[in-house]
Image 1 (cartoon, one colour):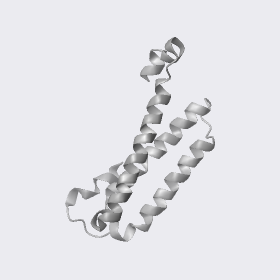
Image 2 (cartoon, helix red, strand yellow):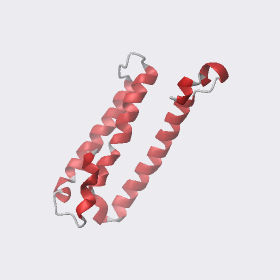
Image 3 (tube, helix red, strand yellow):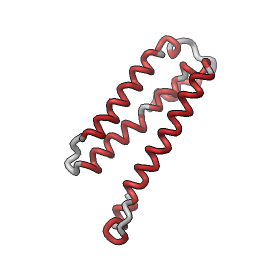
Length: 115
C-alpha cells in the first residue's frame, strides 16, 4: 500500500509491492521447511491445531498474485499453483484429523481454528 501511495514505481523505478511479495515467499519457504523438519523429528507436535495456520500465507499469496498479474483479479497459472499447494496442505492436515480430535493437553491449544 505504501509503495502505491508514494508512487515509488513510477518515481524511482522501485516496485516495493513485488519486493515484499518475493521476500514473503522466500521466508514462507524457509518456515515451511523448518515446520516439516520439526514434524518429522518431534512426533508429539504432528497433531497440533496450529498446523492449520500454514494454509493462510499461500492463500493470501494466491489472491495477491492474481492482482499483480491480472488487474481484473483473474487467477493466472501461478495463482492456481499456489491454490493447489493450499489444497495439498489441507489434505495433509485432514489426514492428521485423528490426532487433532484427541483431547488437548492444554485447553488453549485450539486457538488456531479461530482464523
